[in-house]
Length: 224
Ligand code: DX5
Ligand code: ZN
Image (cartoon, rainbow, N blue to C red; front, side, top):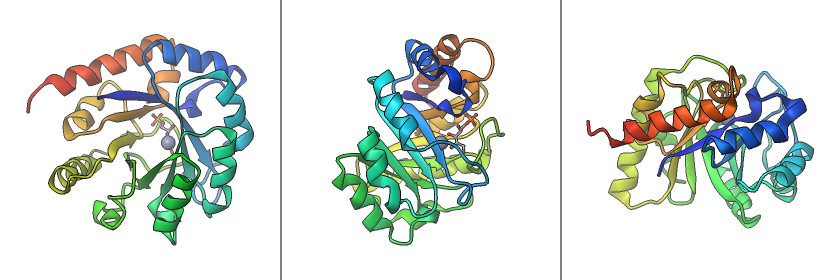
């Protein structure tokens, strides 16, 4: 099933509840929340207090994408604030197995993220453990960046490995997902589509979300 995860990074933070509501009305079914610490990525965003407020504003799952060093230190705080899904970067975790189990111990879905330069092979020992794999299609840190087409083969590889080995993780993609890039990632096997700028950038978030979801679903029907 294809799902759209609007990323609030590109939303108007002074009207977050309203913006989330618009994107939900357009078919968004997971709210993607980008957490940045100014160390793992060259930008700063939000922490648990905003997640706590969002929790009251929506019933949709909150997908917290941690772009931070030492994620173990904060996983409990995000879970307590109301995160439903928590993903950590392979590149930020010295003890990835331990960190993923820590997420699960808080009753959250556990995801692992790979940067554009990180191969799928680095995940081979955790694919049986994760609920989802997030493939970055931009270098993390900012919204509105250009999609990197070279990552598409990684989505396909993850779908193949899942089929071959009988795993059950879902495949999420994040970065530069818009009307002109969505078909390629869906055809490769992406099921959860993060979109910030394409939903909240210009125009109405409801219409933008609906159009993007529609394009994604049409692409998933085309056999290639
Ligand atoms: C980038 C973030 C993304 C970002 C995507 O580091 O992880 O979730 O919001 O934004 P767009 O869709 O504008 O590329
Ligand atoms: Zn993200």
